[in-house]
Amino acid sequence: MRKPKSISEETRAAILDAAWALITEAGRADVAMAEVAARAGVSRQTVFYAFGGRSGLLLAMVRHKDTRSDHVARLGALSSMTAPGPETLVAYSEVWLEYLPVIYPVGILLDAAALTDAEAAAAWTDRMVDALLRGYRRLARAIHTAHGVPEDPRRTADEIWTMVHPTTYRRLVVDCGWTEEAFRARQLSRIRSLAGCADAGGDRPA
Image: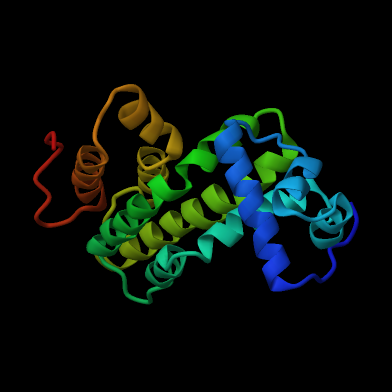
């Protein structure tokens, strides 16, 4: 893969926005570099020059979307707290559930493509595993050390991660017709119980 080189921030943003729009509109993650270049109004060589290949483009595209809101910064601040409590785990989930509908259209496509596409897998792993899941595990361990809950921090973190995963969102919101509000309320209620929050009321439907 060619090493990425510098281009203007304006051109870089145009390429990444074009890639995101194309994947969303096409409903597939395997859009060609030439398609992205045409959409952004640049040459195919410029895209390769800037990102070094499709893998670099997909990864940069996901990270670029992160810069368009404060959600990722808020997640990072929560996951790195020195004295988190059970409510911190809930707050972390609240922030992610706010962000999930924003990245879902591309995220669910990258998630599906990751089964056979190493480049898509690398981009989605960067967001869902290296960032989100590790954040959950870090918080759960810290809370367990300080408060004794959750009882099994790694398993609890992994379980919560699956509850807020794009595939779970798809099954309940897209396939079953839940509203985003019902999905968020239901999952947060369950997360409060798993996190060991004092006022958790059990697993009740939203």
